[in-house]
Amino acid sequence: MRTAAKLLLPILLLSLPWAGSAQAYVKFSVENHGAALEQAYIQNVTTLISNIHKTFVSALRLRVTQDVHVTLKFYKERAEYERDAKGLRGMNYSTVPPAFYRHRPMEIWTVDSPQRELLTQMVLHESCHLFLNNLAAESPIWIDEGLAESIQMARLHKGRFVLLPWPQRDQEIKAMLSQGRLPDLGAYLDLDVKTWQRKDDAGEPMRTLSWSLGWFLLSSAEGRQLINDLVRAHQEGRRIEKSSVLIDRYWRGGLKALDAAWRAWIPGTRTPMVLDIPNPEEPSLTTLIR
Image (cartoon, rainbow, N blue to C red):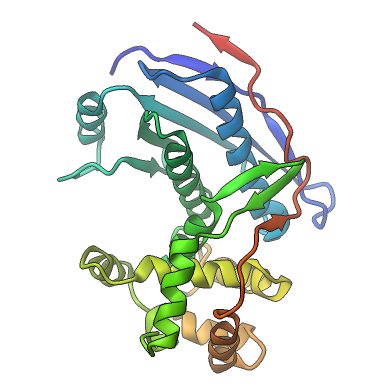
């Protein structure tokens, strides 16, 4: 692999206000494989990724005690990107996706694009997967994709970390409800990863369902607490149980109540969602080492 220029970013202190003196750190470095990366863009995207980490710690109240170092790898040429990705140990790509993450070491890979908004969304999406995998590698795919689909629409606006709704997904879920096409919720939540991905590859609205459920849960304190409970239930050493069983345990009224609340929520209007996290505009970029 070619020698890459590295942008060194500072360690960001993320305090756990509900965990006494416990602290967790996250830092980033960026490898530039010929991409036309503006300093302002790197600063913006790494600050947003930092805010995703803070969201897990603060808004979702998940106990992040492991220090994290994430390397972002931007490529100019798709061919070089695919060659390097296919050469990774343990990676058996037939078609390399436009962005992906690795857990060991913690990396996010992508190809540069003039469509910077789309590029940012892909990087944020993979960052969400990365942080959730770091907490609970066996989390259900509907949570994994639901959070990533929701949080990838993040922005910094007037000193706040804001998630923007996804109009296309919202219109699709409203149509599914009005046409009676919503699936049995328990059966959907209990799908294994391979079945979920096979249905997604076949064009079924798996991501629309996950986005809607993710946005629904993120939009309330009760929903965020359920995310907390479900992620913790899938952490290392815990006996894996079906989502439907866990929801019956953790959501007041159980799965039927959650299904009814979600269906009642769908027809409403989605507005930007502000997540309460510390120092959302804390800068990330410091020094470029050539």
